Length: 391
Image (cartoon, rainbow, N blue to C red; front, side, top):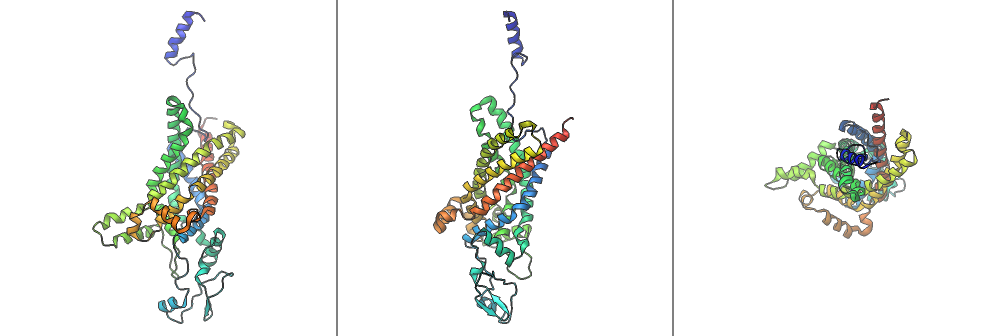
């Protein structure tokens, strides 16, 4: 090149022309397909629907163990002679008071075996499953599924699409302005998206936890649904003598949201910080951008399973605190509790073991749940992308 050619090249380059290629956008390892918000929300909602149904029994087991540690009693209120006589009279028989075969009977009333309170105490995840099936019926393992679906579909429909949006925007910004912090983009994007989703749908989360934590003990009475549970929360506060009853009643629907955010924001930060590099490496092994739907499914499920398991284990104490705040039945105490106070109370009551109550079912639920949600979401995005793209 002579001087004139070099001068021409510099002139063209200032106009974004041919001498140096334009900077390429950072490629997201999750498959940054050019899909609209509606398509992304549809993908996420479908993923949440499937995940909520599959893993709900583990969620019930985790909540029951944590609620029991917080002082919730699962023994039948009529399982002893005194309360039974006071409630119905001495000749009433209760065929629904079914004991586990391993439990010793406290006594016999007529032809019915009466169970001691120990019969209803949970000793672990499998024991929760066994006793719920035997004492309440198999369908009770899916208690709160309607709330889980009502929560999961809009929450994940907000969470994953906004994670994509925040991640893409932040990666584009940091690649130009601060490349050194680009690796931390998934952490920030996940935290922002989760905070938005949590604040939007929190009352349904409160209802789900209460529906799973408490069981209906009145014979023949249907357990309350989402609406009835939330109305019960509001009425508990309004029944107290306070000048601000009306305002406080609706504020109670967000009781424990601070604990929820304290759990979900670190969970999302740990999860996405682990998931993105893991699935990026796995997708490279299965063909990168040329991977088929099965490769996309396998890479995303494996990365999601690993990331969800690690994040769930690390944030278990905060999950215990969230559950305890959400099931608090004293409305005055519930509105005054803080996450820090709750953690200190758990430590005093149960020590290190108490902070990790329900660790098994929580980790067992989170790994498959994140794997299912992320893999289904990415596969549907992959299918929609190839359907819309020109052949």
